[in-house]
Every structure is written in C-alpha cells, then in structure tokens.
Image (cartoon, rainbow, N blue to C red; front, side, top):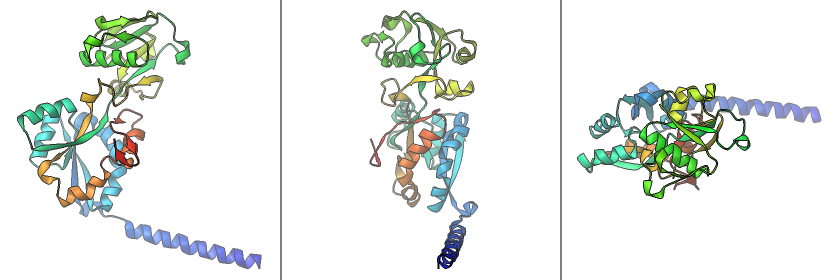
Length: 289
C-alpha cells in the first residue's frame, strides 16, 4: 500500500511540474514586439541604472511595454527630451536642478517625488572597527564646496564634531566649533581622496558613493556611517522621478506607474548597487512617505 501511495505521489508531482513548465512557456514575452517605455538616465550613471532597474524589465514587459534606457549628458538635456515627449520619464534631475528648470519652463514637467540619492559615507583606513578610533587621528574630507559641507555635516550627525548653526548646509572647516577629540582635518581633491583608503595617509575618509565606486569600493565596504535621505544637506541632491504633465493620464503611464515608489522599486534601489544609490523615500505599508 505504501509503495502504491509513493508511486501515485510521484506521478502527481510530475504532472504539477509539467503544468508549471507549460505555464512558463505561455508567459514568455516577445520583448522586441512591445512598445517601448523610455527612461532617461545620465550617461555617467548608465551601468548603475541598468543594474538597479533591470529587475523591473519583466514586470513592465508583462504590462505590455519594453524598458529602454536613453542616455543624456545633462539633466537639462533630459528634461528637454521629456518636454518634447521623446522619453516617458526622466531620472536625471536632482531637486536643485529641476527647481531651476521649472523657473524657465513652468507647468511642463511634473515632479512625482524623490527617488534616490548618492550618499556620502565615513570610511576607516587605519582602523578595523570604530572602537579603535583614537583621539587626534587624521580625517580626509573632499575639498570641493558641496563635498566638504556634506562630509562635515555627516561627521556632526555621527557625533564626532559640532559645527556652527549659522553655517546652515554650507559648512567649511572654519565652521567647526567643537572638536573635543582633536581630529586633524585635511581637504583632499575628490579624484584623489579614495586613494587614502589604500595608502592610509589619513586614518579616516569621508567621500561620496560616486567617488567610492570610481575607486573600486562599495559604500558598505569599511564604512561606519552614512548619510540619511532626510539629512538637510541631502534634500537638494535627491534625484527626482519626472514625467510630462500632459502624459500623466496616458494608458502607458497608467500601466507602468504602479511600479513607481513601490516596494519592488525600493528594494531594487536599496539592494542592487552596493549602496552606491539609496532610496530617497521610505516604505510603510506600501506607501511612499
């Protein structure tokens, strides 16, 4: 009796697997035959964008559209193409760039919200763990205006220093008011700062994810602190999801819009790029907060 039951179970499992295989074949999509859904991305970020959003390829295909990345050299170039309906959405503009564009071109494009950002992080060079950090150690920060400000504000958020409230988000080394542990700061060119991790010319480094990636590092490699998407210095640096206002009710937009700011998009950004990009929105019960 037991042998008979085992045989019947085996046969039934074969039918299940065969049925699943048949369904998969029926669900195969001929992507080349589909209409395109064109996403504008910056040429410098194309590899990261592909890695991040390729997970949505099959889902968008199931909606009847083929995901296509269109490269642009600048945010303004992408916005002009979006205004001309040459692409369907743009991921090229940071908040401050879109603010300027909208002044000259009001009521053409619609900002659906911040999508992602490239964070700054604090990296260890001479130490294996934060507990080993010594008073008076050397910290390298970027020498450019934006990089230095974000680096110092990150160090303040982590509790290492205190900067002047009057400086706002335009902080420089001269704005450090409290440095109780006597850290020694040096301003290093962004294109050289990643070298400090290998050479240990300084004990710690603060740099952008973009710089880290160019130097062959992931943001989570030896980093002990990272910017939050709600940090004041980060808000204007969010990359936005832009659409053409006149297309917001189109069938194409309606079909694909369910993926925008969804848990799947959140996970795609958070998990697929080694924290080079991070979500500029949070998910609570599937709602963009």
